Amino acid sequence: MTALERLRHLMQPTSMGLFIDWDDIATAYGTRFPSDYKDFLSVYGSGEVDGMLSVFAPSTDPHLPSRHTSRLPPDVLDLPEVDEWNDLLHAELYGPADIMVWGETVEADVLGWITSSDEPGTWPVAVYTHGGEWTVYDCTMTEFLLQLLTGEFDGNPTGTRLFGKGGAEFTTD
Image (cartoon, rainbow, N blue to C red; front, side, top):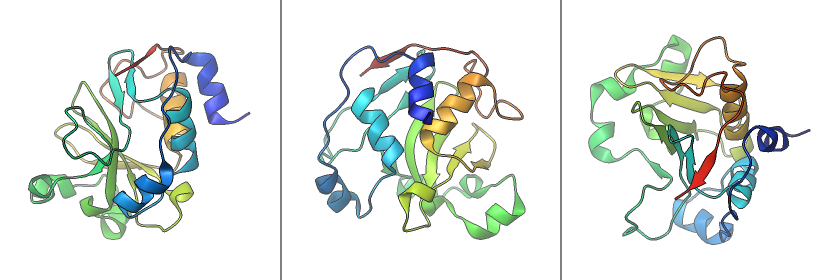
């Protein structure tokens, strides 16, 4: 059973997912996206998990009023604290310019992928805890959400009460 199939048992989709022209998105972003993320958006769309964690969709419209999947903006990349990592090896391997943001929490945690590989299916998840540092999780986005809800991490990777909650409601934007 895939992570998405397991996730669907814990978090029922409340509406139709999104249809996205992934070829247009790949051209606009200059990269392809992980297949589990594409599958997640086709089932759930963009929205919020229990009002605590937002999942963004990519967009080719720069004037969209809502948040969308994106790189960290240049003004954020200039902040020295955004280059803090909890593991020295990760600090040597990655930088904030490698991050593609796919979500955030109400606690101001940033959720993204480290996109330093040409293979999107191998991109690990990185979480920047508010006022803290980046932590890398060797899993896909859907595996991350699943492990967050089931409490399978050694500790809570976000500042939310979703950790180990077991189930959640997903509401679309």
